[in-house]
Amino acid sequence: MFLFCVSAGDAVGRNEHGFVCSAGDGLVVAADSQAEIYIAHEPYYEEGTHARLGTLASYRGCVYGRARSFLLGMVGVGSSRGGVSTGNITLHGTVVAYAKYRAVIEIAEVVQLTVQDLRTGRVIRSVPDGVPLKVTSDYFSIGVGQISSIVLKTDGSVAWIARDVLRSEKAEHETGKEVNYYDLYALDRHGERLIAAGTDVAPNSLALAGTVVYWTEGGTPHSAPLG
Image (cartoon, rainbow, N blue to C red):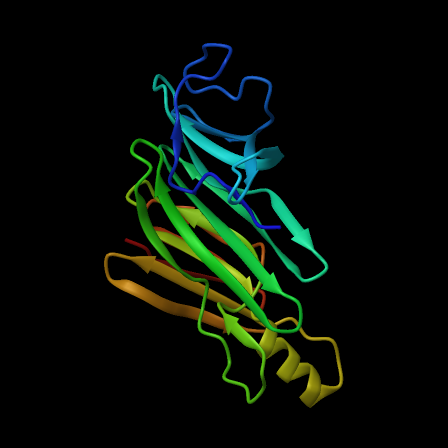
């Protein structure tokens, strides 16, 4: 049986309660003075017959005072073969950044970082969350692994730290110890770049002040421009 639901670019108008940009009965997961992100429930249908089979939990975002919301992605859908999920949601003004995770067990893993404008639904940026280590195996990887932190500017410039799975495994194989290897990337008008990488990058140290990102590496504070 094949299923389908609404696409990530679909927008909806006022909900059944008549609210403008409101979660209604949903759970708000992020909010500021201009916008909010909340959990909604998307209908899904059997392909071919279009028979409605139920609902799936999703993340939606909207700007206050407007009657449209935009689907960011599913909270989490999985089976014994793999799954998809959305996480690391970071809101700044009317712009949101988030990660989409897709996995097929023992075959492939994809981590995509997306920045979206909640005024129009336009995707400003969407890239893999890093360049994975090349390995000689049948395993297919796009992106490096689980994102631990994101900082975001209102112009869509973004930086993030992710645990690099393949480089962590390589270091573990070489040392015989458990290793966490992290990458810090930035993406702005100058393009995408790797700012820092290694086992001494603190995964939750990322911060933003104005046009500068800050992080801790080897117990020492570091900074770099963003935007």
